[in-house]
Amino acid sequence: MKKLNGKVVDEEELEELEEEKEKVVETYSNGVGVSFGFPQPDQNLVVGYALTVKKETSFLKPNFRGLARTKGIKFVCIDVNRPLSDQGPFDVVLHKLLAKEWCEIIEDYRHKHPEVTVLDPPDAIQHLRNRKSMLQGVVDLNLSDCHGKVGVPRQIVVTKDPSSIPYEVTKAGLKLPLVAKPLLVDGTAKSHKLFVAYDQLSLAELEPPLVLQEFVNHGGIVFKVYIVGESITVVKRFSLPNHGKRDLSKVAGMYPVPRVSSYLSSAEDADLDPSIAEHPPRPLLEKLATELRRRLGMGKCQITSAFLQSSF
Ligand SMILES: Nc1ncnc2c1ncn2[C@@H]1O[C@H](COP(=O)(O)OP(=O)(O)OP(=O)(O)O)[C@@H](O)[C@H]1O
Ligand SMILES: O=P(O)(O)O[C@H]1[C@H](O)[C@H](O)[C@H](OP(=O)(O)O)[C@@H](OP(=O)(O)O)[C@@H]1O
Image (cartoon, rainbow, N blue to C red; front, top):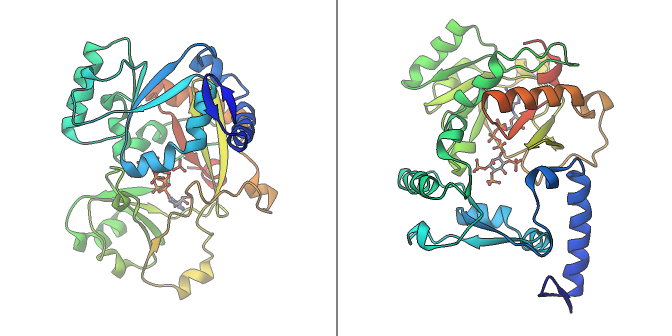
């Protein structure tokens, strides 16, 4: 057993933390620590968090908490059944609860505690809770002078009457197959239930409100771009495979899309065609980050090589 920052940490965990620390330092080597202002070892940054159990489990893993401790960052669970101002004191409040009551509590807390950084203020992320408004910041972006283009697949929003969907798709001139996504993003598993529709008839089985996007071939790889301060981190994940014209003549119906691109589907070590697997050009990402931050303060976006290279 060893002592670290006054805490007893077992040797195995310490080794794990060192490895994690190397990974984190490597990932954030372009100074997020500085822009984030990581506390000095003798300081402590207290982060109060209000997350669902699912999110706490997937995000606040023991080795992440341990690594945070080595950087002087302490995570404290907020009791949502007690007044927030009676808890803490916090330097940061990290939350991802979408209930109206909670949003009112956190807004009130922000005004009473301007010294506390709230991640994120509800009104700053409202547009991300809807798959149409979340793309607004990208729809009219013109980055063509930055080694590539960024755009949005052709899409329509359907809010009622599923029987009208085939007509709306024809009127909009969308080409099959189509990716159907719940319009609202509320953190529930339901909000990640996507489908690929291969024929017009099956569209009437869908459950509005939803977004219907043309399927864009992109070689089965998606790049998730995480932007924190000046730091840009790109991760490569598996995605949906391409559709050839021949496939379409043989496939009909509607198929659910599994969570193919979650953090468990890393493609970093996969043996892939370089033209698909090559990361998006850095200048394009930097320009995209600047534009998204200027317009929306957005912190994360998903890009595939096809979305970058195809002309939208
Ligand atoms: N228009 C499209 N054409 C082809 N593939 C798509 C399209 N839209 C999404 N996908 C693919 O479907 C999968 C899930 O897409 P998306 O990220 O939009 O759903 P999600 O539930 O919001 O995912 P997550 O929350 O895990 O980021 C990803 O592999 C993505 O590459
Ligand atoms: O690939 P990542 O981990 O970035 O994908 C995230 C996704 O971007 C959303 O943050 C999901 O959160 P919710 O919208 O709150 O569901 C995450 O889902 P989770 O079920 O893993 O928390 C994805 O991981």
